[in-house]
Length: 497
Ligand code: NAD
Image 1 (cartoon, helix red, strand yellow):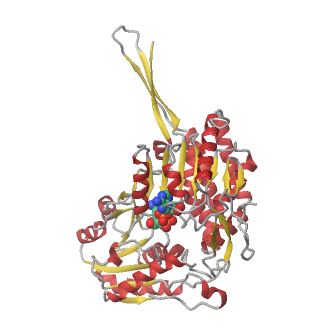
Image 2 (cartoon, protein in one colour):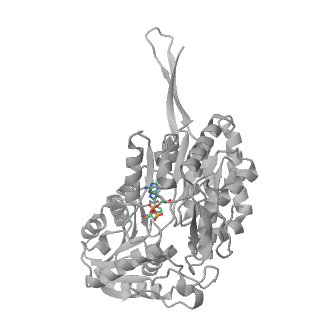
Image 3 (cartoon, protein in one colour):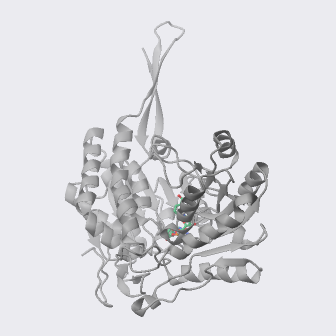
């Protein structure tokens, strides 16, 4: 049994590790609880992998690499990845239900983003690897016979994939898709908050005939648990990680002794810059999504909004109306505009910033507390969408990533000032710029120090383009052919004729 259970408390784990094509409970019998963010009820128990399970998963991944998976032609491998995508689509409702149960996010959001993108990640990278141009040179040699020199791409080996909880299937497959397309095998450590869809994907792998050991899942926490055990395992050839910046730093230390490569997609404190010449309604709609979508739990979301002074008051009022229109509720209710935060612990963190803002004298434009919820929902991890003005730029609320449905809005007077404010952060993940002045749009986009700058839109990207963060928001770029830089190694072959 691998799937989430809605039954009340039970002793046996309902979510198991997936190792070498089998669903297995940890030998220690250790489990941890998986609770619904919507009403706090127990969804099931998850089997916590220990040293033995992590070791078995890494060994299974290595055996598959040397065995059936490594023996496949690229065309056979990519056919299997198309089959994985199709099988996810066929079992769409199961994935949707599992993702919504774990995250509490509105089902409409997961239906349009999480699950379709989870399937697409396998198709896109199967296409990418089939269309990579190679390097080939004919060389002159002193004996006039010449040589041919070319580079081939080989898989890196066993990749550790460590994933967060905010877009569980989407962000995990964003790594697993290219890793497998390039011929690697993986050991995935999903977030302890969202174990379900990674486990369900194990069933999909078996159903379509992906060889055993190619895709493995170990459940658990970070430090002292499956996450750290995996990154410290000597059988891992590379680590790809999405999560908090300080976790990235810990993982870097863990792999430093063995000098293993890392690809990091980390935290952010993203700025939105709204010029007075923007399409006002589009800017309010776009910034509203950037601040409040997924209850603010999107790495690319906006927590700092800078608005040109002539439209500042009008913009704040419109964003307030947008925030107040978002009704919290059950994920499956079509009227629900806002889900809960992922956990009690995360809610405590977000609420600590709500308190800090008030203590520092912010004007609370809207929100700032916990909404009143009826019945069982009162036990969920809800917070109000919140907007502040009036804080200094050195306030922790303006500098630190909160990862909740909230933002601080501040006026600016010149383009240079807006760019300076946007760049005054340790992070560099994403930004949005709203203007109808084309020259200004290009000028500002080039100056803001981020991995991706959106102009007059948000969360729009062709998956073939590079994705990643500058400064402390990440290391490396993934997406399209850029993923190949991490998931393959280039081998140089020189043949004397
Ligand atoms: P997190 O760093 O707390 O956890 C992410 C994963 O790392 C989890 O699976 C966790 O168990 C594991 N982990 C924690 N400590 C570890 C350790 N010492 N060794 C190995 N594994 C460890 O992040 P989160 O709370 O799950 O996710 C939210 C964070 O992710 C935010 O900071 C957000 O900005 C970031 N994020 C970034 C992107 C991006 O593309 N840049 C995308 C989504 C989320």
